[in-house]
Length: 114
Length: 113
Image 1 (tube, rainbow over the protein chains, first blue to last red):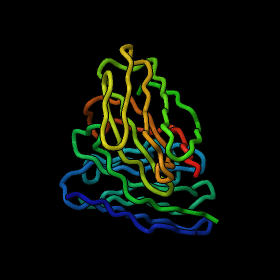
Image 2: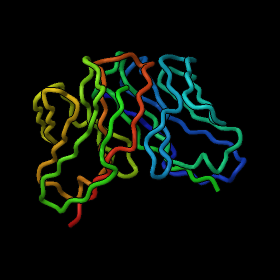
Image 3: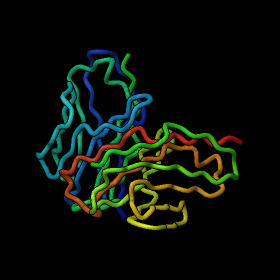
Image 4: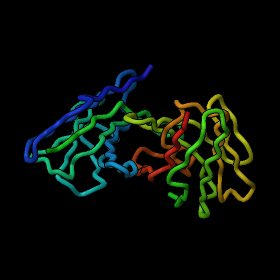
């Protein structure tokens, strides 16, 4: 069966520090991969998605970037964190094509920038 | 993605039936009504999907009138563990991964002992 792993679960980082969040999927090949962010009291915002290795699409201009170095690995990075980067970050995967029940989310990373 | 309107929050006592209504006046002919559930500090998970009339599974029921301009998610006899945010999403039956799927604020359901 397919599983998705996301780490770390919580992270407290000072302003201006770098960030690296990692997500891996097991049990499937060539998944679609997504990074979402949920700020306090707000809905889920799609940040990046990838339909293949090295293919990254960005939905929101920001100081974050994403990379997909391997088929089942998706990394969210920042060179210098801002206070506004605080939030709950979720990685998700889906098969291709996607169906209504096809999104599977990781357990999330709670990032607090101080 | 068709615009949806659903209550920001709802409170219910344990054991009661909860109905969450979502309006989607401009839903496309090909769209299905899909509901996701998000527990605190977790990612959303799919709970139910339907096109017309009524769909029922082990978690919930979904009622969709003939004009499909709204839908109602029904949770029977809620318990504290049903406290979550519920998202209504009109979606095609299947789509390409490049389709930008976003979730709104959803409805925050709080179940009270």
